[in-house]
Length: 55
Image (cartoon, rainbow, N blue to C red; front, side, top):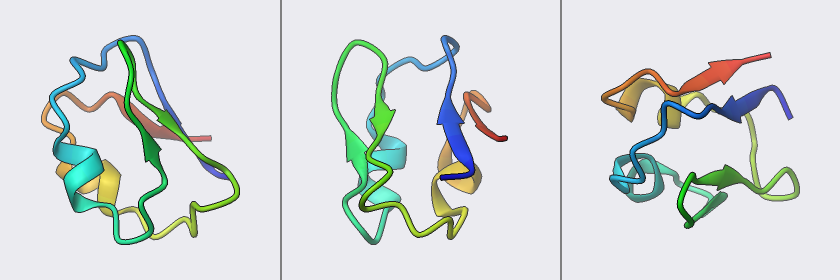
């Protein structure tokens, strides 16, 4: 998995709604399920705070 959600996450749900693989796990700070993530980058583009970074 090449993406990670940082502490800047506001848990707004925008990334979760945009993910075509349902790889975002809801919580105080969202997480990315590495088994479902296909590294498409949709979540990075959708995040309003830039909390998702490529590693």
